[in-house]
Length: 218
Length: 318
Image (cartoon, chains in turn brown, red):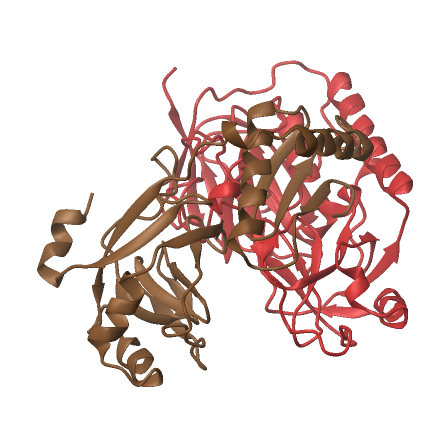
């Protein structure tokens, strides 16, 4: 990408296996601390490396990445962490829950059950700091985006868009169907690491009551 | 060392923020680099006042900043010409000035370029967040309390200094970048240039685009001939990392040049502005015209090396 970005493509689709390969390469690369790499951004199917062209040449970088890929030792890659995320579903916290339920011709309770019964994989952090794109939602809960995006939703809003689900870390405009809200703080610049979730993490949502929110706030 | 009150903001203008050279290494958390959009100007301003080139300064957009010195200070103004004034008299840009307690610095409006940079001798005392003093506007952290400056804000300086060395500190007039109204930006194609026909790529290079008023620190939005992707392709691609200067083509075919507040994007990327021209992106103003020129990787790196060598020589001479 230009004269200082190298996009390493590891597949052409949204899938857990392609995404796992991205994560493996990303972690291996982090561990080997190559000089001249300014930034590494892992995503669904690719790993973007931003490098300093006067410190490391593109050809050297490509060669090094190739060697890393060839010698990559899966057994040294740590298991992704598992997180359970409390969510207050529906009502003022999830204004689109009823719409999502109607779309699937089910009750709101059934929609919550379907959203909470699966374990999702964090494919990528992006869009805004700490925003985790997670998938994959089964067909029985996957729902198209809103036709008209909302101009502002509060931090912690949990949304659905097609086969993905995500949480908005800060108040922002949103095109996703908002079905609930978590009291957890997704991003805190003073925390280490600042984002609650990392690419590759396994996430399961569980339903809490409105009055339980305060005990989860930290 | 004790921080002292150095500059009081009397009027912030539409957008004045604290920026250094950006926050890198946190892309994995979705954290964009932010930073001075015209990094070259910030670096020169810092060097003129005797700071390390990566120190934080003020990025002033378009017009309107007015500020009072609360102590004697070394200052330098670089970048776009916003008609800076000292006590209502014109202030020469690209050189060191020593100003006195009570002096008023003000900026009228841009006559060329879009963003001015103000460096204070001793830097700006704000906490570094994830290694940088830059303001992240989308999430509200870094810089001065994570937000644009407001009337009444007082900036602190850690070790304010006047430049006691008597040598004249001035940036060579011949090396001051030109900020035209019709911009020629050099690009390298990729990574998704193969999602467009050769004909479309040619028209991308031949077209003149107008900079939209919707442009901001996230991106320069362009209006002009629509860039059509290959038949049958969806509007968006699977989201992935982007860098400063990446040119995205959204569904409506109107290019967006990514700036410093985004780390990922879901539109195909036809080309990327070369490193040597990145600082110019900070000076491209709504209403101006942009054209793209294709260059080779060798030429791109040669230009970048020349710029870096020029800055290194300036640094040595100071």
